[in-house]
Figure 1 (cartoon, one colour):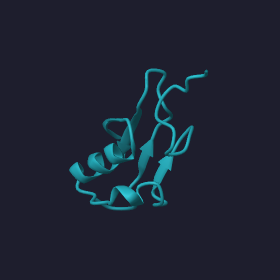
Figure 2 (cartoon, one colour):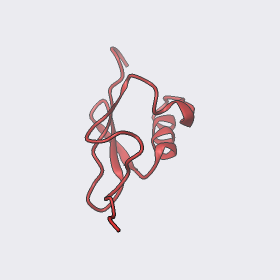
Figure 3 (cartoon, helix red, strand yellow):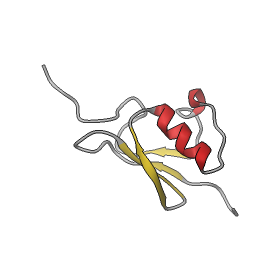
Figure 4 (cartoon, helix red, strand yellow):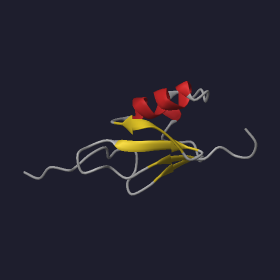
Length: 74
């Protein structure tokens, strides 16, 4: 693959989870950071789950890595 890798974690969906794309290809719907790491591993990008929130080449859109679904209010 030429050029920098572009990983996008889309905003949380209304039903929960976040779509993950690598260079335009949807890898799946993640429900936590470990899912993102697993999708990237399957795409040939080895990354420790603890590092997923820190690497600059992952674009967290709409919310940070601590948000995965609709917020509930009490």
